[in-house]
Structure formats: C-alpha cells, structure tokens
Length: 308
Image 1 (cartoon, rainbow, N blue to C red):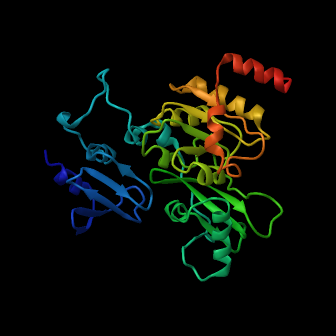
Image 2 (image 1 turned 90 degrees about the horizontal axis):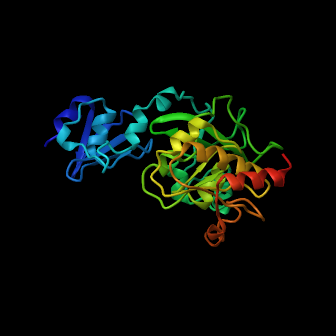
Image 3 (image 1 turned 90 degrees about the vertical axis):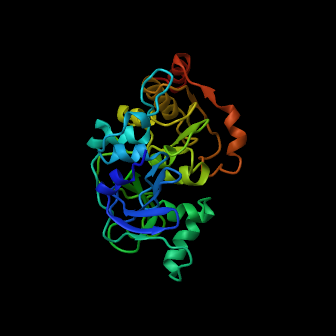
C-alpha cells in the first residue's frame, strides 16, 4: 500500500537524494526530515524525531492509518509507540521555551579558544564528540548564562527545558531557567528510540551523557513526579534502575518508591559509594550487578536508615 501521496500532502518537499526524500521537518521546522519509503523509516537529525515505521509518521501528521497497516500485540491492542506519546494529553500539556539569546552550539574543529575549552571540559568528563553535536549542546559567553554549557531538553520536536553546567565565572554549579520541570526528563527522546534491558535514572545531564547516553534519563534533580513516571512507562525496557549520586541514598529510595507506583516494569536501585555515575563511568558496568530490586520492604529499610 503506497502511503507516499498521503505524507506528501502534509509535508513540504525539499529534495530527493538516492533513496531518501527530504522534507521540511514538521516537528522542529528548522531541519530536514529524511524519509526512506523503501525501508519505511523517517528521521530528523535536528530535533531527533524518528519513526521506525511510516505508519507512526502518518499518525503524527494526523492522517488516518489504513487498518491493514496497524500492528497489534497479543492482547489485540495497538502497541505503545513514540507517536502514542505525541498524541497523549501529557505531551500536549508540555510547554515550550526558547534557548537564551546568547546560546551558541558547540562545533567540532572550532578555532575559538573559549569554545574549545568548553568542548575540552565535556570530553575530559567522558562526553563523546558525536554526542555533543547530536544533542545540540551549546554555550554562552555573555549574559546571564555566561560561562555556562547549555544542555537543551527536547521531547520529540519540542524544546521543553534547558539546563546548564557552569564552567567559568560563577561560584555555583548551574544556572537554570524559571520554567516548569514536572514533565521534563533529560535524554528521554533518545531512550525512546530503541529497546533496552535496563533504563537508568540519573540526576543530571553529565551523568547521562558520560555514563549511559543511549539508555538513561536525567531527572535534573533528586525527585520524580507522577507525570515523569508516566512518560518513563512508555520506554521499551525490562527494568528501571534508579542511581543517583553517592550522597543521595535516601533520595534514591524516594524516587524508586514513587516510580514503582506508576510503571509496569520492575524497579531497582543502585547505591553508589564513591562518586557520581559520570565519575564512575569507567567502572560502572562492574557495579550494575550490585543493584537491588525495590519493593515495600526496601522502603521500610530506607526509612529506618534515614530516621524518618
């Protein structure tokens, strides 16, 4: 069944290169959406949107999907997909924000010494060069965010938040915007792209990008909301592992306790003793077997341990 005409009714065509058709991306409106009709896939390297099946793209564009193209699971219900998230009330409630005017993307091979020092900072802490560009990580050299590395937080086309890491000028660790974080999870859209044996829940972007860039999310703090749990429940994984910094064992248990109420997969905790996930990135794989399944008894023990 040819669905190309339906897609082209909704998208602005730009060019054709080999087996790929390029369109203006409807999710970020600033990059090319690459569509391969032969393989039946679509992706945008700008906002990170990916569709493993073109029926998913049809659904995102508000088009009717022919019943013969729908895949169903063994219970006879439509499988959960990224596009289910896009159509959900939770996603629609998410507000968008703008990056600061002073934001500039970090570029590999730059001759600017200030920019090079920012890139060196990230690489020295375990962040790969390709991740820096893929995630649109940037910096500011003036204004409120001067001296900061800026980490955009996208949720499939929507810039919903950004967080920072102070490198120069300021005696504090980060400077963040005044925006709602209830529905924000750093790196969620990357995690949603594939299936995982485990999805790790860390505190911040440095832990995510240095330790497990393809299979972890960042809370941007030490707490988790019901809405964040509901977003995570859409990830294709066999297990969630909560792993906050070594000074946050009590918070780790609190997050696990909230998470287990709203997700359908098992929840475990991994308590670190000598550093955060980014600092322990080289030995992190050897620590994973130390994780413990979280349950009601775990909650009781954590309360006794914290004296609550």
